[in-house]
Image 1 (cartoon, rainbow, N blue to C red):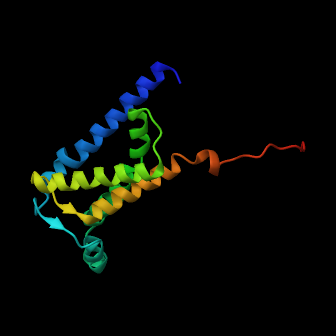
Image 2 (cartoon, rainbow, N blue to C red; image 1 turned 90 degrees about the vertical axis):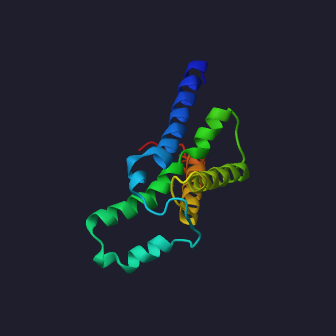
Image 3 (cartoon, rainbow, N blue to C red; image 1 turned 135 degrees about the vertical axis):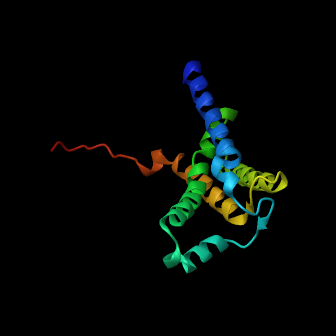
Amino acid sequence: MTQKKRSYLIIICLLYFFLVFHIVFLLDYRLNENFYGSINIIPFYKSYIFFLNCENSNFCHKISFLREFFGNIILFFPFSKALEIVLQKKLTFKKKCFYIFITSFSIEFSQYLFNLGIMEVDDIILNFSGGILGAYLLNCPKKVFKFKKCTKPY
């Protein structure tokens, strides 16, 4: 890989990290949240309440739930690959898991500590799930999509 291409990749990855920071701490929708500085340690409590009251929920509430649920997964999907590019070294799957968990936990704890949101165990689980899914899928295409050479002409 050329130095110029590597520089572009590093810039893209740094922009990704800035985007994660911006989404987690600075977006306008965060200003409308209640219960800043609180902690929710009951896994998937919001999901349980949502499905319990799903019939009574309006469309905006449903979209908000889906955005939060899948957004946490998608947000961390490219994390391990971006980290490898910025650090310029290959990480073991165990180290990727460690960095994904520590980063997700740090983000949630920072939201609590700086009164910028709710520290939720759901978010840690979903961020970790998205990060692990990305670590696996973004590093295994060679194994998954192996094509056999065709020896017989058709």
